[in-house]
Length: 301
Image (cartoon, rainbow, N blue to C red; front, side, top):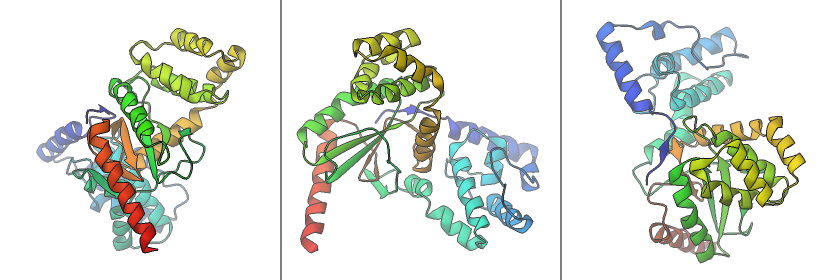
């Protein structure tokens, strides 16, 4: 499955590790503060415990660095940032180093990384309340898609996902989560536009139009698309410019990072990360397997 990568973390980390090994720079071992790691609310002993864990535990991005080292040498790494938050939260609860290790090991991100070579990874919890959805609420299969309206691979995946929903109309529900990548200059604005259209009952119509125009998105084009949908333009443009959707977009991004999302599109099938081509032919046996398993579970009960 081709995806737009969120961060080229591994290459950067590898270079950083090489530099660290050759220069002997070990400042991260003594740093009391780490980039984008929030120690607020911790007692001095809890902070000491958190720092010990961050200096001991390894990052999952493939860089072979400790979490503290990765935060210092590659602050753009989403893996070390997410795992640092897990370690800090565990330290705040008074957990021991062994318990912090277990919390990291059992985190959705670490589990997702460990299962990336399987067609379906281990299930993780993904918050979906308030996210746009289509399909029956009682569907036996829930698809959660993390996507970017300016990503060419996401645009190409859209027809296949639509085919899938048509092939399993009673058994499949799709939930859309925003994951605009920094490399795409109009993606965040497009995400806000889709949500603004959603507030007028036309999220999925705007969703389809944005993906059909993924390679020529601009404010002017997005406004044209909104007009084509006969939206209340005064309300749409006011909502688009208000910044009211930033919290929702950031929440989706954080949910994705916690679940191990590194690029778009990323699809989860009943909470299990799917690692394969997003085509009807490739996904059909996966969904059939999920339906069979749910049927067997129902019989067992």
